[in-house]
Image (cartoon, rainbow, N blue to C red; front, side, top):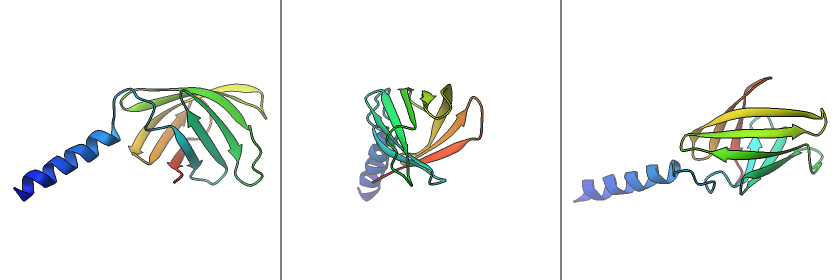
Length: 111
């Protein structure tokens, strides 16, 4: 009986980490692991701001979510350039992103 309860618990936990096409698992605040920015995701849109200065909009963009990836498309306000990245979930709290140009980056959900 105990093994069944543990198995059901693990199944529920894993199902929560990879929920369908819903944006709910990404909505919220995510900090870059290098400490440079915090991005706020909400209902298909996001903005980011510098951590040190709290500058409100450094980038403004949109995102789409599939079961295993998040596609980002944004405009860098400072560079006035459109950019894109594809991110994969390393866990329910961490994303690894590969931009179309530039260095890869990771983000961790802010509590």
